[in-house]
Image (cartoon, rainbow, N blue to C red; front, side):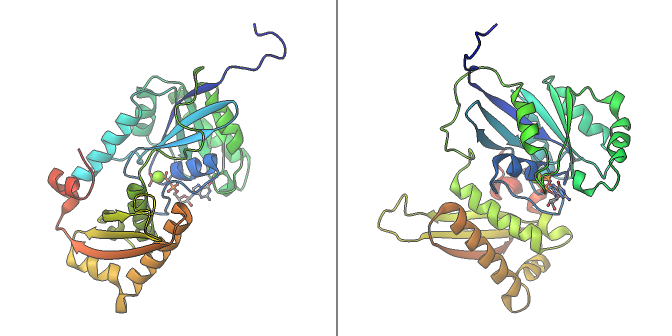
Length: 304
Ligand SMILES: Nc1nc2c(ncn2[C@@H]2O[C@H](COP(=O)(O)OP(=O)(O)OP(=O)(O)O)[C@@H](O)[C@H]2O)c(=O)[nH]1
Ligand SMILES: [Mg+2]
């Protein structure tokens, strides 16, 4: 037993968030970090890569890994996303299953959540949508026996409800040890990746039906004042890749209106995140059926 007054040892480790598409995994991560870090949209399958984010407090450092929503893959891109989930479950101290209280939880999600064998914390998200508190218990009853969770935390990423409680609950499973990342690191991702994600998020919000799912973003040039001290602005050139000429037309929009909006919003968000003025050049290119083949997804930036 520790002597009274002794400071508990620092803890550090990995927690992977998994769950169905659109349950709010990325929103929960942003709420945990208190910062807009990862892409969020109202469309399912927004997240395509496992992304490591870092929550550092005085007592622990938790690497929270965002993952794509669990779904049955139809194309090479979906298979890549499923592998990203598997990879993120490789070495974890705990798994956090994020469920959407308004939707029943699919068996496939439960199975994948249990596969790593790590302690499982169930975060039931979107409780702000609950009319009657009793419905929370009814929701739990629907799968109580089929999920061996260590604990349950009702949360609302939107309103920030119980987010601190969720962080502290997950932190219980971190082993003793020193910080893995410097204390000021928010994400283990390059600025080039973030720039592509910012543009893709805008496309997911702006376009409908198949268009977002057919879109990838390749950053062809990324020059920042960090690398080139003579520069006063960052210079970023990116291709928005779609699968069909009709989709290119939709993204450009009448009189180029949609592309202008995507560009203006992306530029604003990049300037906020990177801290320099940005010159952004955007091109829409067609690569027929890119997400259906391994070669296609590789050239769209999803390396195997
Ligand atoms: N009402 C409500 N909406 C939420 C909450 N959390 C997330 N959302 C919304 O749910 C939608 C999906 O959120 P995401 O965070 O992108 O969900 P995700 O699970 O990461 O989705 P994928 O990456 O596609 O698997 C967005 O429109 C969010 O604004 C919440 O607590 N309450
Ligand atoms: Mg997501």
